[in-house]
Amino acid sequence: MANLFNTELRAQQEWSWQLALDLFLGGLGGGLFLLYQTIDLPPVFALVSIGLVIAGAVVLLTELGHPLRAWRAIFKARSSWISRGVLLVSVFVVTACIHIAPTITNSSWRIWGGDDMGAKVISVAAALSALGITLYPGFVISASRSIPFWDTPMLPAIFFTQSMMGGCGILLLASAFDGGQGMPQAASLTIATIFLNLAMIAGYLLLMRRTGAPARESVRLLLQTRLRGLFWLGAVGAGMVLPLVLLSVQSAVGTATVAGALLLSGGLLFRYCMLKAGVYLPLPLAGIDLSKLNRTTDQLAREYSGWTARR
Amino acid sequence: MGLASRVLFVPYRKSQPCSRGPTRHWSEMATNGRHTTTTTYVRWGMAIDLKRCTGCQSCTMACKVENGTPAGVFWMRVLEREEGTFPLAQTLYMPLRCNHCAEPPCVPVCPTGASYKRTHDSLVLIDQDKCIGCSACVIACPYQVRFVPRHKTGYHGDQFTPYEDVSYKRWQAGTAQKCTFCVHRLDQGLGPACVETCPTKALVYGNLNDPQSEISKLIRTRTHFQPRAEAGTDPSLFYLT
Ligand code: SF4
Ligand code: SF4
Image 1: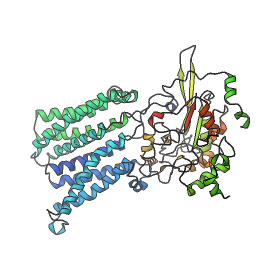
Image 2: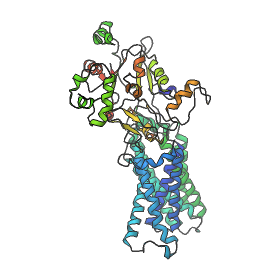
Image 3: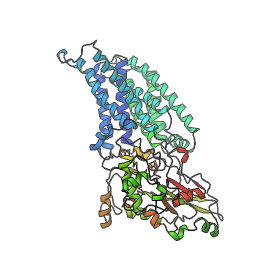
Image 4: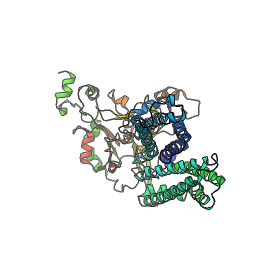
């Protein structure tokens, strides 16, 4: 409580594990669905992605102070990224379900034939909303101008690449169940996304080090002080570097499964660290020269002449 | 002349009987302004004289008493900063509260519309019945003056004092809360509790749209700054230096 009364830089306390888990599950689902659409995966992956997105939404609901009022969050899509996120998740769940329904049920249940225009529209809508789900967490947090560490258009891109990396992690985990058939393809995709992630995070942190005191403090929290263990060992070491090494040196199914699990845990830790490293702009008293505040009684009397009497 | 016509047609300087602050007449105009026109007749603002503030935290306490805020929540608080070194050291004080910004970043991020700006007097308020407690507004405010208390916990734990029993009914746990400019008092023609209580009269409030109000005169005659004006929030709060 005492630090509310001083002007030290303060990290946000409001968004924590639950939001990190929501962003993680949602991103994972969106990324996996995009992979399903682009590299011709079995429909079970689409089902898993829908389940992940729904699980993320449920986690978010439990974090809200009043979850039963959450329906109200659909009305402000013109200005609020949270509202847009709610709409994206809703559209995704509906369109993705309709999209995969024909492939997992018998033909008499089909709504559209394979070449039908409607099916294409639904498929595109599902893919676009999945893309939106991977991007919107970055927009939600970069909309906060009060936290300079988040105030950059790089964040949506980073959250997108993190989501794709998470999707790859699921593919690797799944290779344990299909005897490793899809593993080589998943492994090379994973290695590429890990490199991309590492490069983007490094660029982002370098940029933030030069962006002013609050952002520098955020970087310090991540790399050198409170969050350094979680960030270096968890998000970077176990979450990216170790899977990279494992996938590069050995191509066994067991290794891929371990690498997949590590990728997923690293993705969750990364989101948590990003949230907890959000340092607010300094309060107005900081950095303002107030050394000329002292003045004489005469000056005061002149400034307030007439006013004190009326009061 | 009826009130509506007065609001619409009488030049406002003539209809303002007291230049210092709100009177019952002004708050009636504000309430009726909602129905008659979209023009903002009143823009409540506050000037804080940093030369007068002694850091006594009376405003902090008056706000707590008036609004019954829970432990750890301060709609009004006085920041402290130490300057210089012994023997030429001093403490600087700066009262901090919601600035009722003209361009409030807390409003557009709200997904439910619970955070809104009252059109007729520019106050930024929260509809607690709509708020879902997502904290987006807390994060978006560059002044760290919003709070989302998750539970109703008194100063002595779950055992409420008789005062807490009554005052805690004014807010809902799990929703955002912040300074309301004592809107319940303004609407009765009274001034904000912090202003009324300040022993050094460091706080002055009034209508920024009225060039004859005391606050407008002070802003014209004194050097001043708006907190974090560079953030584009156009705060209705002026620190006099
Ligand atoms: S000070 Fe903060 S809470 Fe108050 S209106 Fe401005 S942005 Fe919103
Ligand atoms: S906490 Fe309440 S007022 Fe703040 S953004 Fe969320 S819904 Fe709106």
